Structures are given as structure tokens and as C-alpha cells.
Amino acid sequence: MERNPEPRKNIPNNISNFESLPNGHIQHTQTQHISRSRTKSQHNVDISQEISKAVQSLKVDVERLTVKINSIQNANKSTAAAQKKFFGGMSPQFIVFVLIWPIVVNFIMNRFVVRRK
Image (cartoon, rainbow, N blue to C red):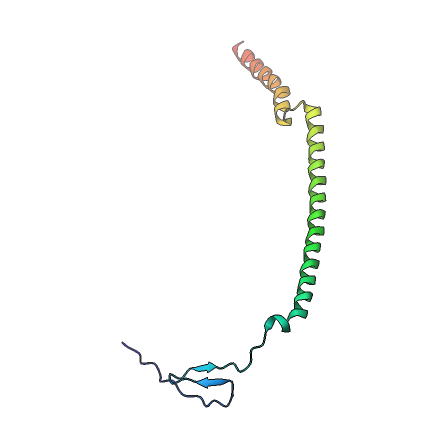
């Protein structure tokens, strides 16, 4: 099923800088060139100042984060060093296992010996 597009309507043009083309489109005719670099030079200074302020703010934030990260890393290192000194580098679970297993084995062996008698 083919759809036929609606024919373009010609819009009356009362603006002097625009020209209507035969196909219905409007073409802009420029009567005088306006340089954008000259008209926005004052805004560029404001934009560059804003950019420099933003960059400075980012630098300060990065420095703060770096200090926080370093302090957290140092705290973690000191905590890990204290744990290694106490256990000699072994995990607490391993220490508990080493201390408990002889008691458990002794209990099991005593039960076995009592049943045999």
C-alpha cells in the first residue's frame, strides 16, 4: 500500500532575508556577514574563566580525595601489621583449629576406648 505524501503548500514569505524556491523550500539569503568571533569575544572570556574555575575546583577535589585515600591505606596497613604481629601471619581460624583439634581427638579416642572395655 503506497501512501501519497501531501503536496507542499507555499507559505507566503514576508521576510526580506528569505527567498522561496520553486520546490517549496525556503532559502536564506544573507545580506550582510556577521562575524561570530567578534560578537562573542566577551563571552569567550567568561567561558574561559568559568573553565579555569572548574579545573581549579577539580584539582582541589582530586587533592582531597588523594589525601583521604592515603590515610585509609595507611590505616589498613597499620591494622594488617598489628594482626600479623599477634598471630605471626596466620589467620585466627587456623589458630583456633590448632588449639581445638587435639581436644576433640582425645575426646573421640576416650569414647572409643570406653566402649571396647
